[in-house]
Every structure is written in structure tokens, then in C-alpha cells.
Length: 281
Image: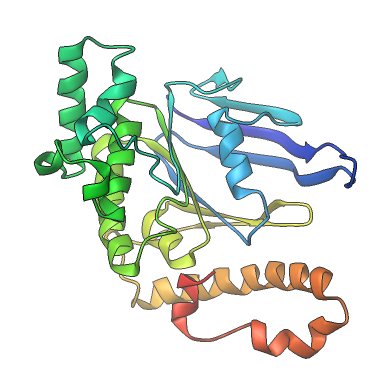
């Protein structure tokens, strides 16, 4: 069972010499079911990545409790694999060796190599096992990162804007890869993104976060058949619904930051009916 439970979680950064204490978010309650694909969506600064880092055990919560697979999260663990926006591959190791690196602590050399090759095959990189990171495209590097995260057979896969730095064509290809991997492995996935369309394409459920302080503002079940068609009426209707709620959060941030200038500049920043807006939020 790989259910993730987040109960009354708060994250506050303490006061410093120059700043007051800062609460990123408070009273976050969220349950991700076994095998569910959930996206965290929201404006910059709402705490999406911070919440993922808390689930990963990379950062402590100030208050509250987090569990994965029924076990309290108190630090990083092999039950949770993490994929970051930057691939962070070791340049002196080839593709297979990058995946093998962590495996060698738990498996024999032969077993580590076999597992690395199996997961590189899963992400369609069998032909590039002996290539070095500088020889790979950005999308290929992220596929290596995904293979590395999966190679430890985690119950939960945590993905922090893994495609945010990639071009549109590469993102489209990797959306298909991630959906294939999720359907093949049955992992529980928590996926952080700022891209509305990406969240609808991939998710069972979208959790919209707001800011100042951060919190959950809404949840959307994505009850659409897979593979999903962004041009379908149901897809565009959901995209518009999420956009409208997200805009309210963006407007709130802008109002605080811009003060009196907000009203005069509002029209230039906010709603564009163009459906491509989903690629830029």
C-alpha cells in the first residue's frame, strides 16, 4: 500500500536578522491514494515544491504529520523516489553507471547492472547506456533521472516540475513516457507543475494551491479517458475552470506586490482567452 497522507502540515521559516517569520503554507490536508497520479498546481511561491520536499523527507514540516505507505516520513527513504527539474547527472559516469550508482549500495554489481538496464529499457534508452551526460539532450537526461528514481523500486514517485526547462516538443514526448511508466508500474505519483494543460494530460486529480500563506484552494477530478485530447470540449472546459480559479490567486499576489499600480496594469497581466495560456502559468 503506497498511500500518502499529509495531515495539518505547516511550514514556517524562522525570523532572521532582516526578516520576520514567514509561513509558506499552513494546515495542508491531503491524501493521495495508492496508485493515484496527483498534480500540485499553483502560482510561484505557493509552496508546491516545499510540500513535495517535505513528503520526500528532504525538509521538515514545522507542524503536522506526513506518512507514506503507512510509515511516518522523518527523512529521505528508498520508498520515495524523487525527480527534480534539473537532471543532476554525474558527468564522469555514463548513463548506465549513473543509474547503477545508488543501486550498488543495496545490490551486488551484477544485480545493480541488471536493474539499471531494465529501467533504462523502460524509458527507451537502451541504445544510450554507454553515452555520457554531455552527449544527451535535455529530454534524454530527464529520462535517465526517471530511470534512476524508479530503479530503487519506490512505492511513491515525486516529480518536481521535471519538464519545466524543456521545449514544448520534448515535453509532449515525455508526457507520453510518464503516462506509459505510470500505467506500467502502478506507482503513486505526486507531480508538481505550473502548467495547467500538463496537469490535465497526466493527472487523476489536480490540487490547486494558493499563496500568502499557501494552502489548498480547490481540487479537480480529471474524469477524462486516456490518452487525453487537449482539443476536446471536456478538456478545454476543465482548463478554463482551473484557469479562472488560478487567476484569482495570481491577482491576489499581484495586488499585494503592486499596491496602487495594480489597478492600472491589471488588464495587461490577467486573463487571455487564448487556450495556450495553459502553457505559461
